[in-house]
Amino acid sequence: MQETIAGNGAVIDAIAPLCTGVNAVRHNSDTFGNGYHWFRLDDPKSMTKAAEPLAKAGARLCMASAYNRRQPADPRQEICYHFELDGAVYNITAPLADEGASVPSITAFFANADWHEREMMELYGVKVSDQPNPRRLFLDERKDKGLLDGAVPLSVMMNGACSKDLWEHILKDKESDKA
Amino acid sequence: MKADTTIETTVTGPRTFSMPLGPVHVALEEPVYFHLEVEGETVRKVTLTSGHVHRGMEALAAQRNLIKNVTLTERVCSLCSNSHSFTYCMAVENVLGISIPMRARYLRTMSEEIKRVASHLFNTAIQAHIIGYKSLFMHTMEVREIMQDVKETVYGNRMNISSNCIGGVKCDLTPELFKYILGALDKVEPLVDELREIYATNPLVLGRTKGIGMFPKEDALRLGIVGPVARGSGICKDVRKDSPYAAYPLVDFKVVVKDGACCHTRTQLRFDEIFESISIIRQCCRDTPDGPLVAPMNEIRVAEAVARTEAPRGEVFYYIRTDGTDVPARLKWRVPSYMNWEALPVMMKNCNVADVALITNTIDPCVSCTER
Image (cartoon, rainbow over all chains, first blue to last red; front, side, top):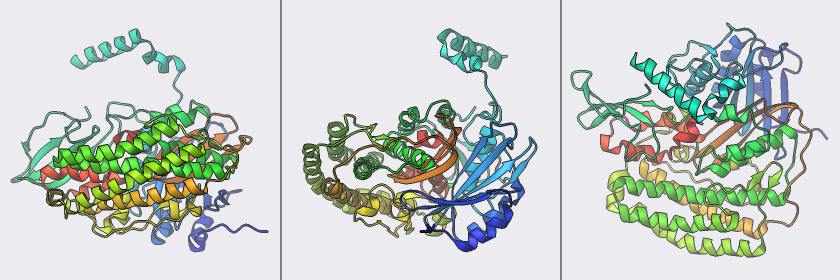
């Protein structure tokens, strides 16, 4: 018997042409029968074209997940946007192939994209074009942009684990602040 | 620096003054900084700055295996602690293709509703505290204590109950414990009814909450607001009904929706939801079948999945990517407060400075889980 997965046909038909790669459009459901639709865009710039039919249909932006790919053959970074519409979740992945790649802001369609975009900008250093409010969200301006984008050597990460090292760091920072 | 803790007023225009509030303030439960532009006692504009309790938990999650992350995610939030481990386990089960046993579905539902009753009572108690109605605050917390006792007796802990595990639940319940829970519900229900009546009719409470912090439905839709805040503005959204999970499709309950859109409405809505939760817990006590508690683990593949649940404050959303190892390549989550903070500038427009903390409380904010 063929499984029927709940979803909005018009929205799926509007987004699918933007995803022409192998397995770029997938549909599945969980054990409770809730539908999940997965799209992988060919070009991150078409994110606004994907957001438009979702906004028109009354979808809600739930979250945006930025992450780094670990295999050299993969795009460097990807962003997966998660939308909810009539109980089904639409996941749209925008691959950022190289360092300078950017994704357009979707705040014109989803006002609540503001925080999600600012978070991916500060934690992953993702470039979001036309972001109307590109301020830091959580992290202090003095922290480097894209803290989660890059490998941190264990020895550096462990600096705070030793109480002597930790206080030496704090005192050093204090001195440099005074200077 | 993130924010100056000193409260000072500086002239920024002909009639408008700039007033910092927080990040540490007596009426705020957690550190958050409001930059208020006020005209006399009236707030004209609100800018929010957070980031004072960012813990880097998502980076930690990418260094722990799938099982250890159950413990980590339970510590994202205190009041919604169970919702996080619950949703995380669902995300892992979705990515691994695990179907949990029926007994676990009921027990997960029950623990979630026990936490919801305690969480809603805490929020309403804090409202009485902010208003300055200390005896009502104490009384509400005393009633909540019955649910805290239930958690301690059944799960061994008052906040982080550690009930969920990947594939099911860790904590089984004996017939005596089901009987004990039913007895506690019989005790708490009339007391909550009495509290609901006080919050609905007391002139002191009404004077501070009715018509304050208005949040129109169109703004709630525009900003993607979730949970009791959205439902208090007339939006019928509840993950338990919209995308059923655990035993929610098998129990009878209704989604409480109100149109008042003010602080008073949101409080009354939470009280009404407590009665729905009590009904769900009773049904779980009655209908939980015998059987195994946990399904076996499956092979970890290269895959991605999402999961969402309705926590006391609204939708919790998890995304997981696995790369064939037992450490997730990415674990990302979004808490309901993250969506609901943006409601505050709308709610606070033209409110009194004295109402800022009160309005903030009605979105039931959690700063720690927002920032992770």
